[in-house]
Length: 320
Image (cartoon, rainbow, N blue to C red; front, side, top):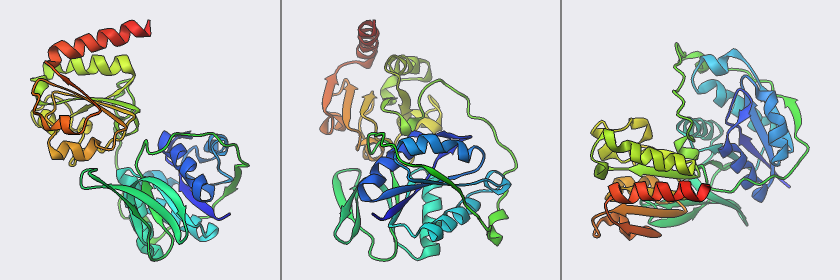
């Protein structure tokens, strides 16, 4: 069976969930070979092996932390040349998509971004994507070279499938461009104790109907009761009610959780583009004609100031 190269997203050896999803998808089309870079790379091997990696390539060098993107592209290209895979899979983050695009240019291959599913076809790997704000699903394959595919978080359930996970050191020669953009400082993200927005299984979002920053505690309380991430519409973040880092939509972050709860959000196409691939969508809005109700699985016509606290109380009661 052909090998599939999987780029590992980890923090000091802690593998992030989207990578484990990639390994699950990679097993559908070949044998996963994982590439882990930077500090803690070798420590990722047990988890990667547990989820199907037959081999784990590792490399650590100051360049991965001190400079942006290009050193990682150099390493991914080196891994590509060493493995000759049937496909390359990368998490569909902002950095992941840049890495994938740069690699595709270097190896003269086509690229597919924001895939939501993968399958083996007669002429290569076939990727499913959502198009036109998720109004349509498309199936695509590249027509030239080795497929380079970025996959959206929450596109597949993580499945354990123990494999050898043999660790091999990867030799990387950095290009002249690798040191072109230096990282001069870092500011740790303030921890909220909630899941990262794009990776969360449940997202609770608030919009214009929340009617002020002082009322977002209602959204946060519901999210905390469900172990969810907090999102916000563009109207809410533009008004300064919630940080832009939590914006869901075409100009914000794209999410695809198992459950998405929209509170006080009308459902403009810009917002729908960022959440319409959610598996189950629930909307709470007092306007029965709000566009959001056109796409929901469950809709509650009511004032969020009554519905959200009642829902939070019910969740907490059922939790015991």
